[in-house]
Image (tube, rainbow, N blue to C red; front, side, top):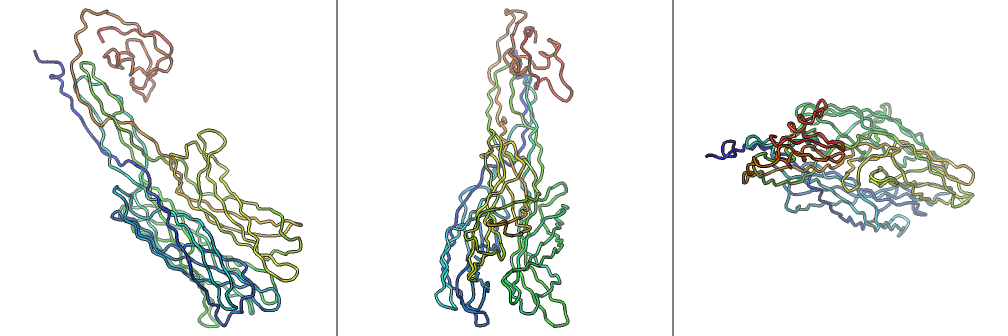
Length: 521
C-alpha cells in the first residue's frame, strides 16, 4: 500500500528578498600641512582670531566594490589686521584630498556613502605679517550599506502541511546619489568701504516627486552675507532665500518611491561686471537624494505535517522599516558667562556636527541628538579681538521606540538662522537648526528556507478518542495543534473558538482554558 505522504507529495514555492546585513565603516584621517600667503591688497596680520577646517566633498561614490571620495579641506582663518582700530579679515586655503578604497568581499549598496566627521586638532600661527602656517587633522567617517539576497519559502502544499505565513514589510534603498549644481541670483554689493567677510548658506528641502527614471526636487538656498562696515567694528548680515528646483535622472527611480533630500552650499562668488548692472551671486551647491522603496513579501515562518515528521531549516534576516521621517526646525538657546565682562560681541558663526542616536532614560527609547559649537567674535576695551567657543548640545523633542543597535539615522543637520547678543555679563546665541532625513529601524524576521518530509506518524487507532489539553493564556493554537498532528482550523472549530476578521486560525492564541482535542482530528 502506498503511504499517505507519497500520495500527497510536498510542493515548495520560493521567493527572494534583499536582506540588510549591516554596514561597512571606515575612519580616514585627513592631515593638513599648509600655509596661507596674505596678498598685498589685504592688511597684514596682527593676531589670529580663529582657524577652522571643514571638508568639502566633491565626489562620493560606491561602485564595483570600491569607494571613491575626493574634495578639499577648506582652511578658513579669521585674523585681526594691524590697522588702527579693530579690523577683522578672513582668508582661506583649499587643501585637496582623494581617497580610493577597495571594499572587502560582500554586496554593497551603490551610490553615495554616508559621511560625517570631526576635527581632531588645528594649530594655526602667524609666521610673519603676510604668512600663516596651519597644521591639523580632520577625521572623515564613511558608512556603506551591505545587502545579501536571501531565498525563503513562500508557500507549501501537499503532504497535509499546516503552515504559518507572515507578511514581511520593509523598505530598501532604490537609489542614492549626490549631484552638484549652480544657481544665480541678484544680490546687492556691500556699501563703499565695507568688507565682505564670508558668504555662506544652507539648503532647506522642499517638495519632491518621483517618476519612472526621474526625481523632481525643490528647496530653498538660505544665503547669508557677512560684512563689516567702514569705520565700525560691528558685523552685519544680509540674507536672501533662493528657491531652486532640479530634475535628476535616476534609472532605478519608480512610482511609489519616497525621496529623502538634504544638501549643502559648497562655494559662492559675488561679481559685478558693469557698474550699471546688478551684482550676481553665483552659488555652487550639492544635493543628496535617496529613494526608499516599500517592499512586501509573504514567507513561511513555521510549518508541520499532520501525517509525517517534517524537518525545517530556518534563518533570520534583517529588513529596514521607517521609524520616522524627519523634517523639522529646532530652536536652540545658548547662554553662558562671557570670559571678560568688558568685551562686546561683534558676531557669531556656528559649526554643527552630524546627528547621532542616544538612548533615552526609558528602556527601548532612542533620541536624535548632536553637538555644535558657537564661535563668538568678541572685542575688548583695548580693541583686541578674541574668539570665544561654546560647545552646546541639541536634540529632537520627539523620542522613538527602538534600540540603538538596530537603528540607523540617515539625517542631516544645518544651521538656518543665527542671532547673537549680550545680556548683562552673559553671551546669548539664538539659532535654528534644520534637521532632515529618515530614521531606520532594523527588523529581524525568522523564515523557513528548507522543508523536508520524514517518516510517517504511526496510526493511533488504539489510542484515546479524546484528549484534554489545559492551555496557558497566550499559548498559540498553532503550537497546540502541532502536538496532536491536527490542523489549527479544525482545533478552533472543535472548541468553538472565534477567529477575528482578517486573521487565520494559525494566529489565534488561547485563554487559560481546557481544550478538547478529538483523536479524529
